[in-house]
Length: 498
Image 1 (tube, rainbow, N blue to C red):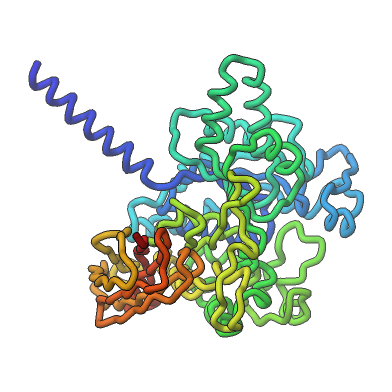
Image 2: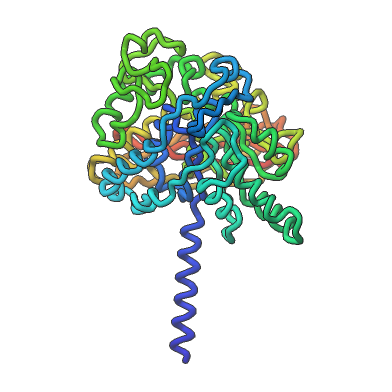
C-alpha cells in the first residue's frame, strides 16, 4: 500500500511537471488569409514553432482575399480602400487552401533536421492535424459556423486557462464567428457571466490592422474585456513599405544578398518563400508585380533587386511570443521582437502602437513610430539565417543563441546610487559572448540618462540624481555571440527609484 501511494505521488509529480512544461510556452492559434506575405510569415513562424505551442492553424478571409460562395453571389467590401479598388466582386485574389498544407508538408521534410537543434519542434502530423478552414466565402462573413470557428470556440472554452494568443493575419471574422457561437449558446443562460469571464481572461488578439469590419462591429461592442494588441504602424518594418520604414543603414538585412542565401540554399521549406524576382508568381494575384525583375524594379513599393524581401507583415504577431529575454509577454509596453504596444487610455483592454509607442531613431535623430520594431531587425534577421541553417545542418555545423542571466531582474534603488550588474553568460556552441548594456529610455518613466560604465562583461549603473520616487529605469543587457551568424539574447533589469 505504501509503495502504491509512493508510486502515485511520483506519477502525480511527473504529470504536474509535464503539464508545467507544456504550459510554460505561450499557446497560439494563427488565422491567415493566405496572402503572399502571410506565406512568408508562415514559413518563418514554422521555423520558430519550438518556441510556442501551436494550437491551431486556421484559414480565414479578409478585405483583400476571399473565396466567394461558388454561386456567383456579388459582394462589395465594407472597407473603403478595397471598395474603391475592386468594387463589386464574386471572389477576390483567393490563393486557395492547399498552400497551407503544402507549407506544412515542406516543414515535414526539414523536421528531421530541425529536431537536431531543438526537440521541441512539433511533428509534421501534429501541425497537419491543426489545420482547419474557417470563414472564407467573403470578407467579414461570420454568419455560419465553420470547422475553423468551431475549433477556436472549443479552445476558448476548454479548461486550460493559460493565455491563448489569437494571431490575426487577415480579418477577425472567423474569431468573431467563434465568439458569436459562444454567445448564442450561453448568453441567456445562468452560465453566461462565468463563460464571458473565462473567455476574456484567456483570449488575447494580436491584430495587424483591421482587415474586415467584424472587430469594430461585433467583437469590440460585445466582448469589450478581451485583450487586444493592435499593430497598425510598426509592422510596416516587415511589410511592403519596408524601404520607407526601415533606416537605410539596415536595408542590407532585407536585401537579396542576405535573403537570397537563406531562400535558395536551405531546403524545400525556404524554397517556397516569395521574394522579388524569384520567378515564382504568387497564387491568386490579379496582377503579379513581384516575380519578374522587370516588374520588381518598377514596383509601386519602390525599386527592388533580385531576392529582396517583399513582406512578412504578420510576423510581429508571433515574434512577440518568442522568449529572447525581454519579458515583453508580461507587459507588451516594454517592447520586444514583436514591437512595443502601449495600453490605451480610452479602452484598458487594448494595447496599441502609434505616437505613444514611438522610439527615438538614432539614424534620423527623430522619434519614429516604427522604430520599436526596426531596432531589432539585425538580431531578428541573423536569427532567421541561423534557423535556415537548422534546416540543413547538424548541431555542430550551425549556430545557436547564447544565454545570459542576471541575479535580479528588478532592483530598488535611490537617486544617485551606483549599482553593479554582473551577468553570467554561456553559449551552447562554445562561442565567445560579448555584452552591451543600454538604457531603453522610451519604456522607463525616468527620461534622464543613467550613467553606464562598462568594464568587460560587467557594468556600473549610476541612477540619475534628478530621478523621482517611483520612476523606473530599464537597462537592457544584450548578449551577442561570435558565431556565424552572430546571435543575440537579452535580459532586462528594471530599476525602481525609492
